Image: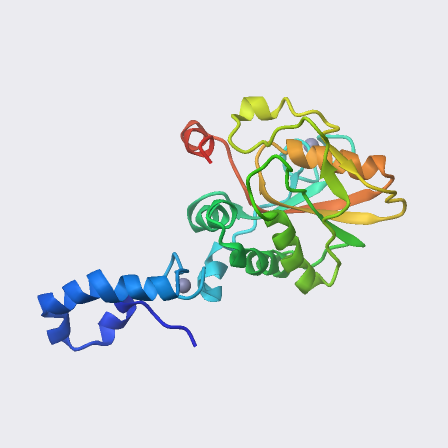
Amino acid sequence: MFIRTLRGHRKDMPSTSLRCPFFKVVTDAIVHPLLHFVWPETCPVCGRIGVPCCDSCMRTVISPLPSFCVKCGAPYGFECCSGSIPCHALSLHEGLSRELLLNLKYKNIRSLGMPMGRLMGETFNDLYADILLPVPLHKYGRREYNQSLLLAEGVSQISKIPADDRILFWRNDIVPQAGKASSLRHMMPIDAIGASGSLKGVTAVLVDDVYTTGNTLRAAISAVEKAEGKVSSVLVWSRRIPSQENEAVWNRE
Ligand SMILES: [Zn+2]
Ligand SMILES: [Zn+2]
C-alpha cells in the first residue's frame, strides 16, 4: 500500500486543520521532510511518496509516434535510406516523459528503468527478434548503470526476448555524446561501436533511451551487421524533435 503525501491527504482532513497555521508550519518544516527522508522517491505527477512514479501516472506518457526510419528520421515505409529500419518511440522528449528519463539518467533513480521498459514492451508488443541489444554505456561516462539496459530488461519481461548488454561496446577514443551540440554529434564515426563475437543468423532489436540524431543507433546497427547479424527494429523511450528552443535546453542535458 502506498502512502500519499500530506498534500494529498489534506483533501480528506478537517478544514480546521487546514486553517491552523501551526499545523502548516509543523507539516511543512518537520513532517514532510521527515517522510521524504524515509521515502526519498516521490511521484512527479501526483506527489505520492515511496515510488519514483506510480504505474497509472507513468502510463499517461504513452503516446507512440508513427514509426520512423532510424537512419534518417523520416516516416518509415516510404523510400528514404537503403536498408531502412523502423524505430518506435513511446513518446516525444517533453513533459513527464522527459522528466522521467532525466530522473533515470541523471538523478540515479534506477528503479524507474524496468517499469519504463515494461511500458515500452507493452506498447510495442509485436517484436520479432532473438535478442534485445541495449546501446552500451560509454566507459568514459559518469553514470553508474546503463539506463538502456534497464529499459531493455523491462521490455524483456514483457516480450520474453532475452536482453544482453555484453555484445555491443564502445570502441576506444570515442567521447560520450550527451552534452554535445547536435552539430558535433554528427562527427561520431560509424564504427564507434563494435560487437563482440559473431551474430550470424541472429536478429536483434536495439533498445535505447532517446532518439536524437540517430548517430549512436546507426553505429550500433553497423556493429551488428558487421558481426553478420540483423536489426529488425529499434525501440526508444522518446524522440527529440529539434527546435531552437529545445536545443538550448537539451544541450545542457
Ligand atoms: Zn503518481
Ligand atoms: Zn531513412
